[in-house]
Structures are given as structure tokens and as C-alpha cells.
Length: 404
Image 1: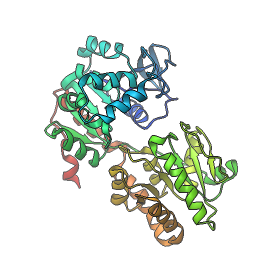
Image 2: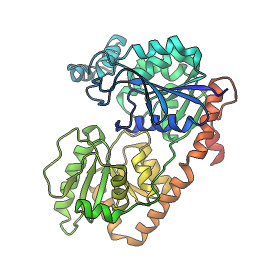
Image 3: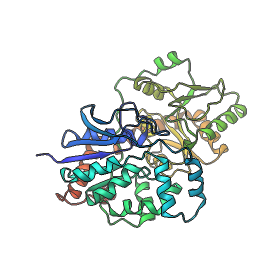
Image 4: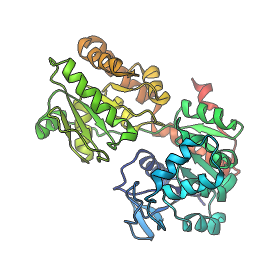
């Protein structure tokens, strides 16, 4: 009989647009050929309001049994004030931290209550993303059965004492990058807990048509941003930098193409082309046709969009303040990173002014993903960590370092 695995994430569905949530869906679907997989999640689609969009109860998503629980209240209208209070207090009380977690949402106590009632049915419980209520509360319930995929990066919330139990009492970790593992071990001194560094397998369509994208949207020379268009992703800074770049480099016809849901106002600028949420076909056609993919976020635990671009032989330009994104560039030699406007300008001009080096970077980017981000190898690592927390095997801890 195959082992039964629960995957827990704050949002789940084909319409859900988010890196961690997409990763959770990929993992659930990839594991389903070897395990009995159930997903426990909320009824929410939108991560800002946490309004209940899906119906509560059992449904099927791409062949995976999904059990949804309602969020009992939307994100608090006072969340901003509570967040400011929390961030301004160097030693926030546990009461304030728990108030913040509930106000942030999704507050869905029926989910961990269900897990507690049915825990004996599961051999392993995979909890995705440390920041939200479902993961932290379900690790509290699952204990050593929990495999924690924290998607951690350097941000103030990681240092909240509330999260210490989740990071020290789970049965094992799956980290997306070496940088994430190093960060978590440094903050929580928990490197004795078994872990694997898995990343994500990157699949792209066999047939990609960048010319079809150019004709459909009327763009030729462009860089592309893919993801939520949000100040938290650095998009406000990107807009300022790109406007300044166009002023200082009028000879460049380059435009900025945006793919994703806007959460902040997009400037009215003939050189910025927002497309909204696009189909997978348009996304990959658009990435392939770009001069580069740009990611201005300071806080990323992996970035699937960056890896998809590199798999398409498209170099990336990323925020050097993010250790993970900088690490992708350094290990691959397929991308550039910046820390201020002038470095941003230098990165973009380098790609245009050095065609031979640009061609080498394209090949390096593709080779990096082909080498390190394939599902066949990742599946074996998940098997090892599931065996570990279910008592059926030894940890694969530090196997990555031995292979390199």
C-alpha cells in the first residue's frame, strides 16, 4: 500500500497565481504517481482579502483530492496598523505576534482541527510557506510527521519568535536553494533536522513562438517581468528605474512588458506595456522573445519565473540584494544583478553592447537549469525525506554538498 501524504498550503487551485502556491501544486501532482496525496487548503483565491471564493469541502484539481476549509474572517482592515506596530517593536510580545498572524489571514482554524483529527491517516504532512496560519498551525499539530517547505528569505517576519516552534519541531525540511538552507540554519540553529535541497523542476513547452507574441501584442525589443505586480516585489522601484533608463538612453527602443495581476498602479507610459494575466502559451512565447527577464524583488526564495526564462535561454537581470537571485546569476553565469539604478542601467546596456557575451550567457542560463532543476532528481529527494519522517529511511541531509 502506498504512503499517504498531505500537502498543506494557504491557497490552491488552477486560478491561483503565486510562486509558493504553484510549487505546492506541482509537488502534489508530481508525488501522486507514487503516493496517495490529499491537499488541505482554504477557499481563498485572493491573498489580500482571503475572501472565500471556492466552496468548502472536497473537490478534484487535476486529479488531486483537495479538501477546502473556509477562512473565518477576511484580512483585518486594521492589518496595516498591526503590521506597523509589529515591525516597529524590536521585541514584540507573543500576543501581538498572534494578533498579527490572525489579522494577516487566512484565519482558518478548521484546517488544523481536521488535521489533528485525521493525523494518523497520513505518513507525512508537507507544509508550504512559513508566513501564513495554515503551515505554522499544522506543523504544531503534525510535529515530526511534518516536512516543512518554508520558502524563507530575509525579511523581518522570519525573526518572529512565534515561528521558532515550526522551524525547530518539524520532522524535516525541503529547502529550495542553498541560500535558503544557510539562512534558516543561521537564524534557528536547526541544522540537525534532516533536510533536502530540492528546488523545482522546470518544464517549458516544446514549441514556443516568440514572433507570434510580438505580432499579437505589438512589441519587438523588450524586457519582461512575470509575476504579481506589487510594491512588495519591487515593481514600484522598477518603474522608476525604467523611466530613468529611457530618459538617459533615448537611443534604446526597449520597452518593459508586464505579465501578471496588478496590485499597485502602473504608470501611464508608452514604454510600459501591461498585459495582465496571460495564457501559458503567451507567457512562454513572451519570455522567449525578450532580451531579458527582470525581477526587482528583494525577497525571493527561488523564483520559478527566473528559472523558466533561463530554461528558455533568456538571461535574467535581478535585484542583487536578494541572496537567492544573486546566487542563480553567480552559479549559472547566465544573469546579471544590480543594487542601485546605475548598476541597473549598466546591466541592461551590457546585454545590448556585448552581443558575443550575451550569446554565451544565453547558453549558460539553459545549461544551469538543465543541470540543477530536473524533476527526476527532485522526486528522489522527496522520496528520501518522506521516508525519513515516516520512519522508513535515512535522511538525505547534505547530499547536495557531496554531489557538487
